[in-house]
Length: 118
Length: 111
Image (cartoon, rainbow over all chains, first blue to last red; front, side):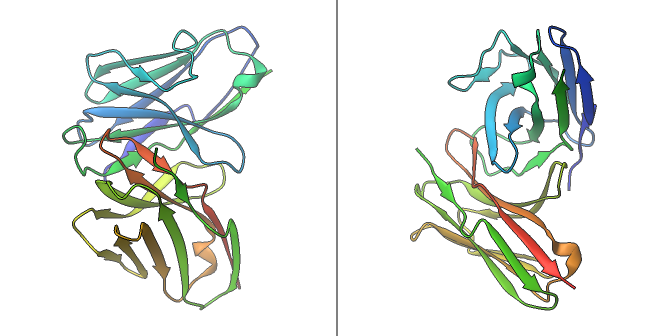
């Protein structure tokens, strides 16, 4: 299957600082990328959907000014957690999909990033 | 709004047993259904993808079926091994291209 690389795999930061997480599709062009958040023993919660060259679409309840998403190219999307606080500590996972919007394309996931804010 | 349910939340079986993991969804208007595996602290690995027009897909010891009319999918694992221990999630893709996930089934295969 296709490979999605997410970096870093874990990060510890101080409260009030910003953290950037990168998501790259290594062997395909991702027309759409998704960012998820996962709490312990819970399922994945979709935060936002991004298409290359356009603004991300955020899910209800997700602060777009806090979670900045940039999908600058067909192979790279970044999530920046701004002014991080301990409650932002979580596991963040990106997903990339090729193919037309709404099509039956398979979704591939990165390895996830464990963010701990102290 | 699509809801995906996976019951039970956890399952423990002895090595070698054949087992079935269940997944149910409320909205039959899905483009596809995917089964994923997640190891602790890791991302998701795609196991099988079933398009809405398909009934089943097979990969090695894994077989996934899809019955849209009843809103059900199953993942069959043959001859389970300790290395199969992980959390298995199913997710349906809706018309908005978004995946809706179940909470997963944590499988433990005892040697």
